[in-house]
Image (tube, rainbow, N blue to C red):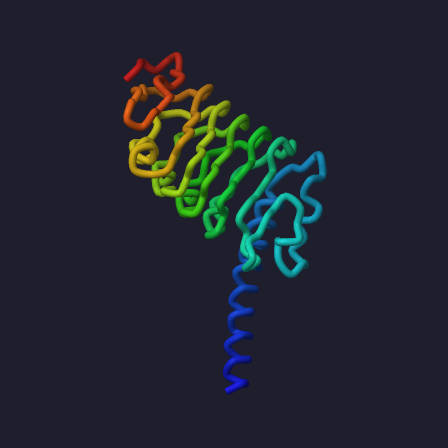
Length: 200
């Protein structure tokens, strides 16, 4: 009986280690694509047991990644699709950098995300409709980028059917209008327009 319990414990530890190594692999893969002139990521070392010992990340009691804090770090480079594999991530704070490229649709897999802060970067392209899957999200701040298109209906629906309290998409190249809805207290009344695109 004792040997079965020991075997079960070892199996559970092995699974937890695999999850932690996956999270470490994802973050290290991202690090290799980032320019880091202020050397904020030297602790992101794939030879360590798990990323919970790295700076700028927080883990839960199960050693699973819940938070990435890289605001105002001077980083340049893309967001990578593999970030969507961080299943327990609750906070993705990457504001005030020079992050470029598009927002990966895979971020819509982060269903435990509470805060998505990508503001004041150089992101372009549309807001992915998959972000409408983030039913736990309270804060989505994407302002100060170069995002185009309209706000997806799936994202707007997070205000009425989800927990979204703050949606800031100002100072982009978006088109369309969002109307005040007194029942939700929605404060965004108009989206900043692309000068070449008529209001919708």
